[in-house]
Amino acid sequence: MSPANHLKRRCLLIQKQGIRAGTVRRSAWIIAGAFLLLPGSRAGEGPFFITYTHQMEEPGNLEIATKSLTGKPDGGNRFLGAATEFEYGVKAWWTTELYVDGQATGGESALFTGYRWENRFRVLPREHWINPVLYVEFENINGADKSLLEVVGHDGLDDLTTANSEARREKQREIEAKLILSSYVKGWTIAENFIAEKNIRHEPYEFGYAVGVSRPLALVATPDRCTFCRENFQVGVEVYGGLGTHAGFGLHDTSHYVAPTLGWTLANGAMFGVSPGFGLTGTSARFLLRFGVSYEIAQCGRATRRLFGNSGGSQ
Amino acid sequence: MRVTLRAFIVAAGGLMVAGSSVRAESPVHRAPARASKITNPLDGNEQAPLAGAKLYARECAACHGAAGAGGGKAPALTQTEVSSAAPGTLFWVLRNGSLYRGMPSFAHLPEPQRWQIVTYLRTLRPNATAAVKPNR
Image 1: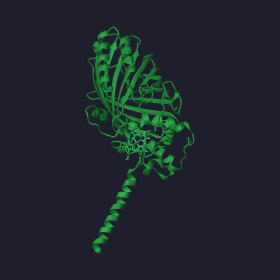
Image 2 (image 1 turned 135 degrees about the vertical axis):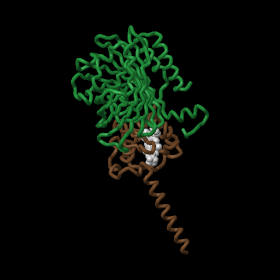
Image 3 (image 1 turned 90 degrees about the vertical axis):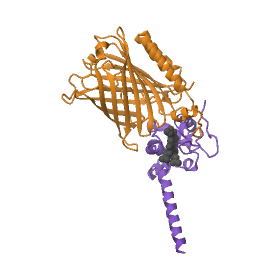
Image 4 (image 1 turned 30 degrees about the horizontal axis):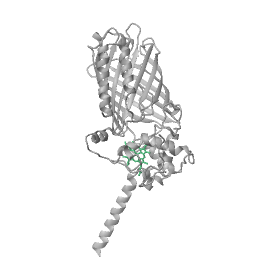
């Protein structure tokens, strides 16, 4: 079976089993275990969960990733929010991504919460000290979504504690734009994201930010394929939060998080990430744990054509 | 005579345009002259081409082929244009890519790793399997 099919079947299995069992912990273990069994291709991106850099997906490559989040907010039940991500390099300057989101909340229910489609465009053709990327996203999710891939406006604890039965009724059809600025300086990655989001029907413009810094533990690669060598580990920290709305811009009544991150690339190319996040204000959840796995299928189109008998290319 | 002269002028003009477009199209030729002056800090380092081969297999082989023979839109890297290019020029190509023509930027790789790849690229030769094989 091809890696892509293998992955698809595993993902379906994960979703079905997770919902049937209805327990947060079990879903988490199934997701992590499934990716451990996958055959590998090549290294993934940096260790960030929230912050974007100007690194684009290579043209023709498909990256499949999960970004999960678990926590037990004060006054709410433990939950697991999971986003499955399909990222494709259309051009070297244009990356498109589809996210499919779901969540399970202890003592409540497990549900599909919607999808997001995002596109990132590199603005300048060459590398500079600061590199701008424009990001545009359409999201069609409901109020029960708990993947928290960005924090904007006055997002806060309420969003994580409202019962699923009630929260799912709120439709969130939103357009989101980000300005991504990022730089690579002496092995360090430094990225700043400015976010503006607008619900299509109503509600004001909401703003947010994310800032991240990371670095691999070693800048020089060893000659051997290795799993535990320092070059395979990247450490960093992300800070992100809301900046209110156009009617009330600022820090008042907003949530903010600081989150150390660790990324580990296996010799087969799959990348694991983990990031404990700590709330900085009264409206933030006190502690959130993110974890994820990403796997890249190089030259996905060519590989698929080869699968169907067209040899294409010379490799 | 007039016809021959005109034909000559057209042919010469055509060759110049073709020549200049080839020069303009190839990323190695597009690199600014000052890039070629930057020297490879890993020159002479015995581990560098081996590590470069490992990184090449992971980052580049899917497009340029395992031994650099090229494939699809990605040109062969075994051409002398590449192996004889100044290390600084190749470093420039890896940093910037050629985004509108399908070559990604590899600026996200730490500088020493890009130099390791450059060291390896300069060992590639036409009609040969990879000169340096990545360790298993």
